[in-house]
Image (cartoon, rainbow, N blue to C red):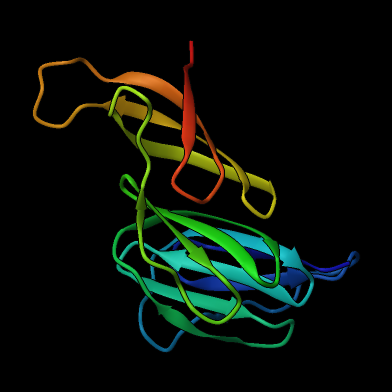
Length: 158
């Protein structure tokens, strides 16, 4: 089993169970890594705040397209990842990113996720701040059970 670690400046290293590799870079351009997730030793995805996404095949990193403002990613298979940008989520199917889905609860509050995890395709949980944009409602903590389609349920997190 191999493990991959990425630094916020775009450097990465792999761990083979005994030794860390010499650090490499995701790109020839500066990259601010905001999220990293590996489904297998030969499938990892990294996202950056300024829109770049990268896929690791166990040997090298290649571009996987671009989306603005990404902060989190979670991958469960080589054909399923969810990435978050502000109150939007994007699904990666192994070759391309789908259209954004805005994460809202039943009261039409937007969720601005701080963390994300998926344990299987379309079985994800995001936790963050929920608020109605343009209203005087104070923000509140929300946990969203996100199916990846257009349904989400929320509970107030304490």
